[in-house]
Image (cartoon, rainbow, N blue to C red):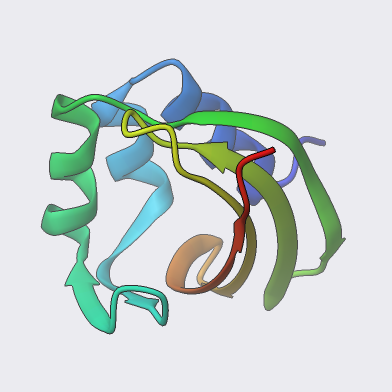
Length: 108
Protein backbone atom coordinates (compact mmCIF):
# COMPACT_ATOMS: atom_id res chain seq x y z
CA UNK A 1 0.00 0.00 0.00
CA UNK A 2 1.37 3.43 -0.95
CA UNK A 3 2.08 5.77 1.94
CA UNK A 4 -0.02 8.89 2.55
CA UNK A 5 3.06 11.07 2.09
CA UNK A 6 4.07 9.39 -1.18
CA UNK A 7 0.51 9.87 -2.48
CA UNK A 8 0.66 13.55 -1.55
CA UNK A 9 4.10 14.03 -3.12
CA UNK A 10 3.00 12.30 -6.35
CA UNK A 11 -0.21 14.37 -6.52
CA UNK A 12 1.79 17.56 -5.85
CA UNK A 13 4.34 16.67 -8.51
CA UNK A 14 1.48 16.11 -11.00
CA UNK A 15 -0.08 19.47 -9.94
CA UNK A 16 -3.30 17.57 -9.20
CA UNK A 17 -4.95 20.09 -6.88
CA UNK A 18 -8.04 17.97 -6.19
CA UNK A 19 -5.92 14.93 -5.28
CA UNK A 20 -3.74 17.01 -2.95
CA UNK A 21 -6.87 18.52 -1.37
CA UNK A 22 -8.29 15.05 -0.72
CA UNK A 23 -5.09 13.95 1.06
CA UNK A 24 -4.69 17.07 3.23
CA UNK A 25 -6.86 17.49 6.34
CA UNK A 26 -9.23 20.50 6.33
CA UNK A 27 -7.55 21.80 9.53
CA UNK A 28 -4.05 21.51 8.02
CA UNK A 29 -1.39 23.99 9.15
CA UNK A 30 2.07 24.34 7.63
CA UNK A 31 4.85 25.96 9.61
CA UNK A 32 7.77 27.24 7.56
CA UNK A 33 10.66 28.07 9.86
CA UNK A 34 12.72 29.44 6.95
CA UNK A 35 10.00 31.98 6.10
CA UNK A 36 8.71 32.45 9.67
CA UNK A 37 5.17 31.79 8.45
CA UNK A 38 2.16 29.57 9.07
CA UNK A 39 -0.12 28.59 6.21
CA UNK A 40 -3.52 26.94 5.87
CA UNK A 41 -4.63 24.21 3.50
CA UNK A 42 -5.94 26.85 1.08
CA UNK A 43 -2.65 28.79 1.22
CA UNK A 44 -0.72 25.62 0.42
CA UNK A 45 -3.08 24.62 -2.41
CA UNK A 46 -2.61 28.10 -3.90
CA UNK A 47 1.06 27.28 -4.46
CA UNK A 48 0.04 24.75 -7.11
CA UNK A 49 -1.13 27.62 -9.32
CA UNK A 50 2.27 29.32 -9.50
CA UNK A 51 5.76 28.34 -10.61
CA UNK A 52 7.07 25.35 -8.71
CA UNK A 53 10.58 24.83 -7.43
CA UNK A 54 12.36 21.82 -8.87
CA UNK A 55 12.61 18.99 -6.38
CA UNK A 56 15.29 16.35 -6.32
CA UNK A 57 16.01 13.24 -4.30
CA UNK A 58 12.74 13.24 -2.33
CA UNK A 59 12.82 10.50 0.25
CA UNK A 60 10.68 9.38 3.11
CA UNK A 61 13.02 8.77 6.02
CA UNK A 62 10.32 7.45 8.35
CA UNK A 63 6.54 7.13 8.26
CA UNK A 64 3.88 5.47 10.36
CA UNK A 65 0.16 6.20 10.89
CA UNK A 66 0.91 9.31 12.97
CA UNK A 67 4.08 10.96 11.66
CA UNK A 68 6.41 11.14 8.68
CA UNK A 69 9.87 12.62 8.24
CA UNK A 70 11.06 13.47 4.72
CA UNK A 71 13.97 15.20 3.01
CA UNK A 72 14.48 16.70 -0.43
CA UNK A 73 16.52 19.23 -2.33
CA UNK A 74 14.76 22.21 -3.90
CA UNK A 75 15.80 24.69 -6.56
CA UNK A 76 13.65 27.81 -6.79
CA UNK A 77 12.95 29.90 -9.91
CA UNK A 78 15.44 32.47 -8.51
CA UNK A 79 18.22 29.86 -8.69
CA UNK A 80 18.43 29.55 -4.90
CA UNK A 81 18.84 25.98 -3.63
CA UNK A 82 17.93 24.48 -0.28
CA UNK A 83 18.02 21.15 1.49
CA UNK A 84 14.60 20.82 3.12
CA UNK A 85 13.56 18.60 6.03
CA UNK A 86 9.82 18.09 6.47
CA UNK A 87 7.94 16.61 9.42
CA UNK A 88 4.31 15.69 8.82
CA UNK A 89 1.65 14.86 11.38
CA UNK A 90 -0.93 12.40 10.06
CA UNK A 91 -4.45 12.35 11.52
CA UNK A 92 -7.39 10.25 10.32
CA UNK A 93 -5.28 9.05 7.38
CA UNK A 94 -4.69 12.60 6.11
CA UNK A 95 -1.83 15.07 6.33
CA UNK A 96 -2.75 17.24 9.33
CA UNK A 97 0.34 19.40 9.72
CA UNK A 98 3.73 20.01 8.15
CA UNK A 99 6.81 21.71 9.55
CA UNK A 100 9.77 22.52 7.37
CA UNK A 101 13.32 23.51 8.05
CA UNK A 102 15.60 24.56 5.22
CA UNK A 103 19.34 24.86 4.85
CA UNK A 104 20.52 27.12 2.01
CA UNK A 105 22.97 25.47 -0.37
CA UNK A 106 25.62 27.96 -1.49
CA UNK A 107 26.17 28.46 -5.22
CA UNK A 108 29.31 26.79 -6.52
